[in-house]
Structures are given as C-alpha cells and as structure tokens.
Image (cartoon, rainbow, N blue to C red):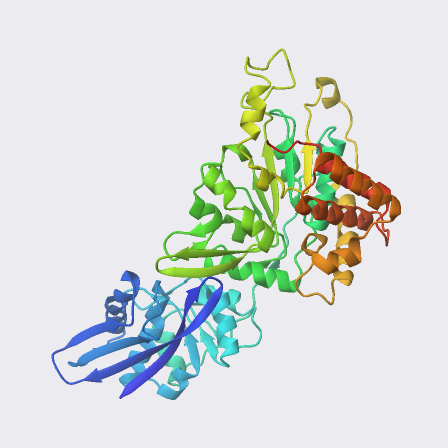
Length: 504
C-alpha cells in the first residue's frame, strides 16, 4: 500500500506542491527518504521515529520508503516532518488515508511530538487554496496562515492532536487570522530644524515612490529625515499587505501571525554582503530589497557599500523584481521599493567648510561620490543637498508641517494615482508609469515642454533622466491637486534632478 500526503517546496515566494509518498514492504527494517532531500529533510526520519515513539506507536519491522515527488525538485527545510509523519500514519492505517490526501501539511516535529513553527505558512496557505485543500500547520503558524480566507486552516500543537483529529476523537477548530498591526510613528518631521527643501523632496518621494539621494556633511540631518519617512507614507492596501507578508513569512519575520499595514523600512549596514542585499545564500532567501517590497530601503553611507553591491541594484530598481540565480536554485522575488540613500560629500565630510576640510578638497569629493556610478546615479529621481544647520537655528521653534499633515497630502496624491492607474495592473504609482502610459498622464503644457527641452539639451539628460523628470513633475502636480502638468511642476522636478552632479 502507498499512502500519500501533500506539502510544499518554496521557490522564492512561490510554493510548489510536493506529494509525499510512503510505501512499506517486506525486508530488513529500514527508513529511507528519497526525492532530492537536503540534510534537514533526511534527518526527518529520526524526528518522526522519536515523535511516534513518544505516542507509543512503534514502526513495523519492514522497509519504509518515503518519496518526495517530483523527485528532481530540491527539498529544503524542516517543514517536511509533519507530512512525512502523516503519510506514514496513513500507510499504517492509523488515520484515514483519504482525509490526509485532502490536506496540505507543513511543520517540524520535536522529539516529544510537539509541532514547532516553521517559515512560509502564508504562501503555503495560498498554495493550499489553489489546490482546494485544507492546510495543517503548527499552532504558532495558524494565525498567519488563516489570513488566506479561501482555505480552512487547522493548527494543532502536537502530533497527538493531529491523530485525534483524524480519528474523530477531538476535532480541531479552524484557526483565526491574527490582528492587523499598525504601529504609531512618534518621530515627527517638525523635529527636523531647517532643511525645508529636503522635507519637500521627502514628501515628493513618498507620494510617487521616487528614489532619493541626500548628500550633506555629517550631522546635517540625513538619517534623521529618512527615519521620519515611514510617518508620512500611507498604509499598505490589503493586496500590498498580503504581498509583503508572504515575503516576510519566508524570512520568518511575522510576529504572532499578525499582518502589518505599516510599510517596511529596512536599513542595512554598509558592510552587508551582496546576498544580504539582493538575496541568495542557502536556499536563495530574500534579501533586503525584497524585504523592503512596497516600503523603504534606506542605505546610509551609500558610497561605502561595496561597488558590486551597488551595481546589483540597477536592474531591480528598473524592473521591480530580482532573479536570484544559483547553481541549485533559480528564484524570483518582487522588490518594488523606495530607495533612499545618504552620503557625505567627500571622505572627510566637510568639503563645504574650508576650516575643517582636508587638504585634498575638491578632488576627494569627486573621488568619493565617484564610487556611485553614472548609471546608478541616473536612477535617482530626487537629488538633494542637505547643508549643515547653524547652531543658532537649533534654538528656533519647530517649523514646517507636522508628519500627519504631510501624510494627509501624500495619501491624497496616492489616491489620485490609484484612480488614474485603476485600469493598469502593472502601475500603482507615478514611478511605475512608462511608455505610452507616461505620455498620456504626464505630458506637460507648452511652457513645461519648452523648459524640459532646454534642460535636456543644456545638461545632456539621458532618455531615462528625461522620463524620470516627467514622473516627478506628475507627482508634484498630484500634490498640488492639478489635473495637468504645468511649467512650475517641471521646473521643480528639474531642480531636484540637477542638485547633485552626476559622477564623470
């Protein structure tokens, strides 16, 4: 007799169905797992054996073979323990085989039979819903998986509860979705003294998801400004929250099954490796750019990142997705993020202050910012110089609008974009518009076209730079509540484009 259970193997955010087959045959007693398992999957037989022994269930003196089909798909992770145990229990006729086949299971077994939480419950629930099966997962994963309302989620605490459920002794109650979390943002833009131009650029970046580079001396407020960006971003929509949470589920970052409506804010250190930023490593896990999907990726000390790491950002910025290709893995992750970078003007950081600058000024400035290649610099829509704040200004009262006021303007601008792109599934904000769609929504008036033509000819804007100016101008018009893009909108967009020169 061959008994079957079902689970999933993860390829990026996609969960592929895996059939777990269990066969018992006469011969010398053995327990074998085949089907391209990794070390954690191969060790599952020992955990399953110990868990069954804790329930006083002895394995028969036969050859037990577990096959994970399709056999050419790599199987990684400890979540195969529970489906292997289910297939074995069905083969031993302890639980009904038909009920097991109508379920997708994942979970790690401890030696005493308890179910240990695993990563990936949310994408597994999505796969179970597509296959029209229920999901069986550890209790600590139930609140997370239950967000997929299209399938029933059962979340036992132990293998003993699973057996009692399938034998009708103590049926499990379906799990309920966790709470929707929305954290407050105590950091207010009004706390930043001065820097009104940088605050305006931050508002534009939040409204249209435009990438932003801030250049200024140490202590001028770059990191302070970036830390207040989450407070002016609108909450995630239901679809965006599910997309983002699926990635965080694979990374094990969901807390107590709750899905957050706050946009991610990731700030990796400049010593981070390429695999940490882009994704990769064991199992080709998502990197920081994917964990920042639908949110913000803040990279402080931008020129200090390794050149190879910076250059790998170029393609994901354009396409909104990253393909992690390795010898044994080829996975695709979404990564539509808002990149905010901060940099000093030179290595010493005081190029604009003759009293404190080093002897290599101005050559050290060109050399330092030259670490940012021209093609990468061309992808920043907003380039802002952040000058040092005078000591006398620090004693002045707070100025400018508070974060809730700015957030309201940003949300109104986002609502205009949502209505504009309602019929275009691949565009959500102005930064996504391209081709004919960009021409349709962002063509400026006659004065704006003339100004943009003069700027493009005078400063040698690339085609990418030309289109990015149009996108920023469209966002500025949305913040002003204007249906059309006028010359003042184009002029402001151009001013941000030319604020920091492109490295030669």
